[in-house]
Every structure is written in structure tokens, then in C-alpha cells.
Image (cartoon, rainbow, N blue to C red; front, top):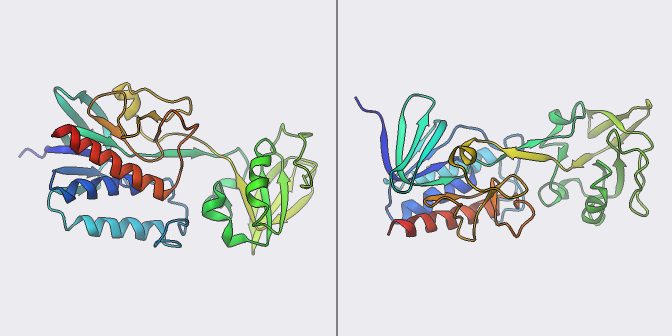
Length: 297
């Protein structure tokens, strides 16, 4: 029995961008297959914020609601499956080889697999990530308003100080190894020694420094690096921005005809990096889906 699938548009990635793309396609009764491998950038986060109408909603509940809404559209099929290889072009069609042995054949592709964060090499940071440690003040700072907030990394401290000063009761810059002696933004205290480890304690984080000293903060903000979470941009030979994200135009089109991208993995070249938020991912998913449908007409 042939278990392979054929569809108009293949969407790879089941986060906000992919779910919104599937909804947009379903609304005009085009066939779509959405592949979701269960890996999400915001998986460690208990509640997402800065999303009108969904502020404070757990990301898993948001995705569950999205899937339930997609069930009303018979032309959209959601598969809990992972693509391993993606090949083809707009002339011959695209083929995604799944890890379970199946193949999905599609006329167009929307990539929405996102990126993965690379945290500074500080013991204990990964255990705090998404809770007592975060990257985005827009998503994470308000809940800690009036408390002492730590800024991990002196190199990006000036940016964080400017953003957090109206929210935090107090700020403390926590240098990483190799950042000793970097000047702190005016009026902002900075620890004398680099951070050795971070440990969660009741109502906060205990910071241990390389000289043996300690400090307490309620939350830690730090800038993470990131990389593509899937190999498809490389497999298809897509053009990338300097950030490592897929280069797209304002319609979500990539450098290869028939391939579109949405969410954190892609951005317009005029931006220095993607705008990582659920709202932007939803908008990008809708735009890429509309453009993919237009290309089929």
C-alpha cells in the first residue's frame, strides 16, 4: 500500500508560523500537509506574552487550539512527523523524505522550522532558560517588574539597560569570562568578577562568581546566538542573510522559486536579524501562505 502523500503545499514546522500558514491555505480550500516534529523554540517557556488576546497563554495550549481550529478545514492534514531530506524544484515538484519512510510530494513548500538558541557557556543557565532566564524583555520583563534583574554579558549590556531601566527596580551587569574590565553603562553597577554558575533559589537566581562571591537576582537576561534548526535551507541551496537566516522578500519568497519561508528562520535582508515573536511568526505565516497560493494560480 502506497503511504506517500501528494499535496499542493507542504508546510514544515508546527509552530505559530506553520499553523497560521495552514489556516490561510485551508480558508481557500487548497490542499496542504503540515509536518510537526514536536520541537519548538519556546518549549521551555511556561507562558507566552506580548500576544494580544493570548497574553499569558502556555505555548502548548496555543498550539493545541491552533490544531483544533485546523480540524475544521478538510483540505489541511497535520502529521506528527519529521522530514529528513527535502529536494526538488518548482518544475519537477518537491519531495520531502520523512524519518518514518514516507514521502510527501508537493508543488510548493513553506519552511517554518525556526531556529535553536545557543546559550552562553555558563553552568546552570540552560536549566533556567525560559523561566528565570530569558532573552526578550518584551516577552519576559513585566512579570519581574520592580525586582533586581541581572544582565548576563557585558558586551550587550547597554542595550539591555536601556530596555529594562523603566521595568526593573535594580540592574546588575554580570560579565561573562573574558569580559572583565569592560565599561558598564553609566550608573549601572557591574560585578567585578565573571560569572561561574547560576543556581535557581526560591524567588530568584543565585549568581556565583569566579572569585567565590555571590549575588541574588530575580531574573537573568542574556543574548543568545542561534542556528537553523533544520537542514532544508542548505539542502535546497537557499540564499542566507549574514545572520544565518534564510533571505526572503516581503512576500516570504526565498531565492528558489516555489519555496517560501516564515518565522524565526527567515527575514528580509534589510533587517539585521529575525524579529522573534509569536505575532511576527503569525503574520509571516499568513504572508508566505498567500504568496504560495498566488504562485499556484
